Length: 238
Image (tube, rainbow, N blue to C red; front, side, top):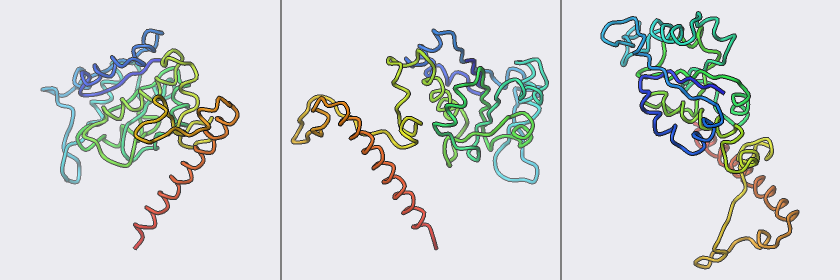
């Protein structure tokens, strides 16, 4: 897989590249590159943003700046680029990232992640250059860099060679293997600590019973999650 991140702060990804699972997949031939909008901006003084039409606080990332960066990188009209690779605008209002979407993205040969800044993107960037908009949650960050790292992290760890055990990424929270439910609890040594013990079934050596217990715990967590969500929604009603 080849991931390009378009950003105003490429140095922010230096730490991310040094994480073990990321170095593992890069060593297997995958790529994570950062492209600085300012390197190709058609505006003077490295300008990339402007005031919003209609007034309001903040600045907006310009469509001509993003087009110039995409053209320079791929040597193609960004409108046509969407037919060749998945181009994702990272924004709070986009499709919420979940395990099913991560599986979709991990199956792609190439991804382009567009990081916003300030008040976000000129909407024409999302409408005409991006294949879709993706959100990591219904809240606002100062920029898209952290969101890009979350997307890249979730995707890269799905690739072969990323993790120490080939099955580590299969049975996880919200995965298809757990039918979309949260993962079950985990315990390790010591078996007793301050009077807090480990469930006996995990010490039994009976693999079928352990598997049954884990599935039931996963279902219980899913039920508790739904109840908490419903209670929160009820609490917001007038």
